[in-house]
Image 1 (spheres, rainbow over the protein chains, first blue to last red):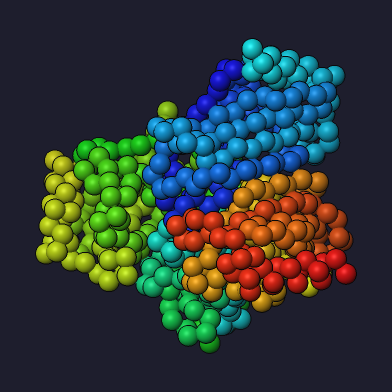
Image 2 (tube, rainbow over the protein chains, first blue to last red; image 1 turned 180 degrees about the vertical axis):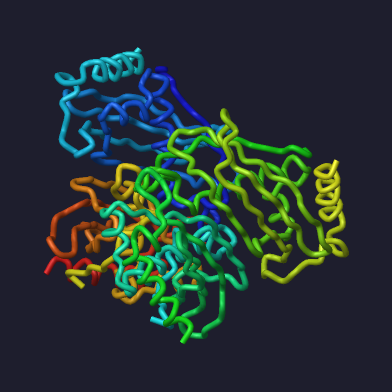
Length: 142
Length: 142
Length: 142
Length: 142
C-alpha cells in the first residue's frame, strides 16, 4: 500500500465549457481515492460511520498542473503523510493512466468526530484506527 | 401562486463540454423551484423533514427543447398538476428570463414517507399537508 | 450486447441528507452506461464528437423504485429500444449488483446534431451510425 | 468593492449523507462569488472568454471550520489578495448570512490563457484586465 492508486474514467458530466474537467471534481476524485485507500488499509469508511466515527475534511489544497479531459482514464494516487493524535494528513497525485502526465497534486487533513461533530482523539479513544493510519504511514515511508 | 416562478443564474460548473448546461442539472433546477414553490404554499421542506415527513421523488420526466448557457438567467415555473391521497404531481417549465424562450418542460411525482421510507397517506394522516397542496392545485386551476 | 451492463460504486458526494443517492445522479448513471454501451456497439462518443456529430438528449424519464446507498455497487443496464431516421430511444435499469434489487428504470431519446446543434438525419447523412444502432436494436430483440 | 459579498441558499442536492454541505461544493461557491466579484469589478467572465481570455484555476486552498446546512443562506466574501504580471490571488470567506458564523475560508490563484491554454501575461498583453485587478486590490487595501 506504500504505493496505492485507483483509476477513474472521466465522465461527460464532469467536464465544463472549457472542454476539460471542472476543477471542483478533483476534490471528489481525492475522496474516491481516499475511500478506496483506507479500505485497503483495513478501514471501510461506511463501517466507520456506522460505528459512529466520522472523518470530516479539515482542509484541502489542490495544485492544478494540466487538465484532464473527457473519457480519459486517470490514476489517483493516495498516501498517508502524517498521523497525529486526533487527525491525519493525506497526499494525492492525479495523472493520465497511460502517459503518466501529472494533472493535479494535493493534500487533505481529516479530523475524527462523533455524528454530532464532537472531536474524537483517535490515539486515545479509537486506538485501532490510529494504528491503521500509523501502519499506513510507515509503509509510505519505506 | 397560480403562477409561481423563481430565477437562477446558470453557473460555470453546470456547463459541460458541449458549452451548454449539462442535462442532469435541469432536474436540480426543478428541485430548487419545487422547494421555493412549496415554501410559498406554506410548507418549509426543511421543517417538514424535521417533523418526520419526507417527500421522495417517484418519477421525473424532462423534455429538452433548447439549451441554456453559462451566465444566463433562467426562470423556473412550478405548479401543482394533481393531488392524490398519497402523492402529488408537479409540472415545470424552464425558460430564458428575458426572451421567454423555453428550454425545458417537465414533471415529477412525489410520495410522502417517514424517514424510514414508509409511505404516508397524507389525505388521512397529514391532512394539513394534503390541504396545502389541494389549495395550490385550485389556485393553478383558476 | 443484447444484455449490456456496466457497474458503478456509489460515491459519498452522490448521496444527500436523506442518506441515499440524490435522484439527479441516476441521470448521470444513465449517461455513464450509455457511453460504455455505444462504445461496445462500436461508437466512441468522443470520436463521434470529434467527427462533428453530437448526440443531445431530447427527453429523459426516470421511475424511482428503491434507493441506492453509499458504497453500494450498482449495475446499470442499457439497451436500444427504437431507432428512427434521426433519433434513437434507449432504456435503462439500475439495480443492486449483488441482490438484483431494482432501484430505478428509465429511458432517454437522443437526436443527432452538428456542434451548432443543427439536426442530422443519421439514416440519410450518417448511415454508418444508423447501422450501428440498428444492429444494436436487433441484438436486443433476439 | 473592498467588501464584496454575494449570497446563496444551500440546495438539497449540495448536501451529503452527513446531513451537511459536501465539502467539494465550497469550491463551487468560491467560483460563484468570483464570477460576481469580477463582474462588479467591471469584467464579465463570459465576455472575457468570448474575447479569447480564459482564467483557469492554478491552485485552491480551503479551511473547513463549521458545516453549512440545507436551506441555510450563506454569505460568500471575495477579495483580491495579490496581482502579478500573469496571475492573481483571491481570498474567500463563507459564513452564515444571519449569525455571521464562519463556515469556510480559502484562497485561489488564477492564471490567464488563450482557449488553447497558452499563458497570457496580462500586465503586458491585456493591460486593461491587469488594471481592473490592480484597482480591485487597491480598494481591498483601503
